[in-house]
Amino acid sequence: MKVGILEFQDNAFIRGVVQRLSDLSPQFIRLGELSHPQPSPYQVIIDRVSFADPYVRAILRYWSYAGAYVTSDKLSELLLYDSLGIRYPRTVVLPRINRAEDFRELVRPPDWQAVEERIGFPCILKPADGYGWQDVFRVETPLALRSLYESLSDSRVLLVQELVEHVDYVRAFCVDSRDVFLVRWLPRPFDMAEYSLIPREELGDVRDELMQKTAALTAAQGLDFNTVEWSIRKDRVPVVIDSYNDVPDVRPEKLPAECYEWVVDRFCACVRGKLASEQSNAVTGSRGTSQPATGAR
Figure 1 (cartoon, one colour):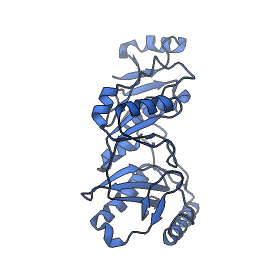
Figure 2 (cartoon, rainbow, N blue to C red; figure 1 turned 180 degrees about the vertical axis):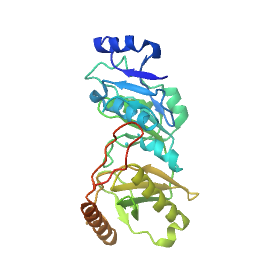
Figure 3 (cartoon, rainbow, N blue to C red; figure 1 turned 90 degrees about the vertical axis):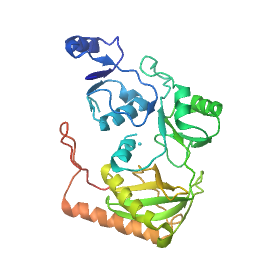
Figure 4 (cartoon, rainbow, N blue to C red; figure 1 turned 45 degrees about the vertical axis):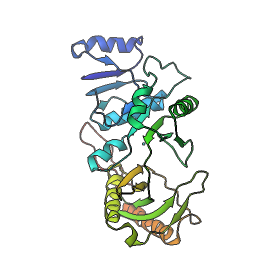
């Protein structure tokens, strides 16, 4: 389709727009679950409602990365994984139930059979904008998945993902979109996670892949400071679990001293470099003319 519209159909302004664009056959959009990968179904999207709903914003951001031009202003990462050749869990974005506003005309409930067939069990349910292991669940059954969704979907945009069984878990700190430090991480809720250093020889050939792809992901997201989480499978294949942490947790009592000092040193060097260069964050001026972002975050 050429033009999609995110607005209520009884809106007077949008009715006038539809009338004047009748030669383009614009279509009102109704959102459901999104199975990745998915190309944008529209070339241009007229958006007048996403400001009121985080699920709609997330899907529009995804479609904008997939090629749509959105007339408005953690999901777009999925498209980056494909373009950079990075493995990731099978993922479905679940629609948020907006009980404060009546969005039933725009957003329908999940097709649970399709979701369950794609992901399988056990699986992981977590927020798309999660932090600190809040509302992250290992889910064993379809009944449990639906129950958790009903209890959380009015307040969070949720992802359901394939469970990746791992033999190692690595958190990669990246500074200035190029410098990378790998540290072993034992993920646990309630701030009980533990870090430890990884002897260089233990990762073998996987180490170079993690370094290169962490830097590539961070640069592609326009971040100067980031952490990327990697699950290493039994066959030594790395799978990305989380790649967007623009405010990484850096505490000396949690990190190994060598890692902590490295992060502080590199981050300060990054700030100095940006100051000396007198660069600023670029803004997308028009379609297809965006510039890489700079400036420490």
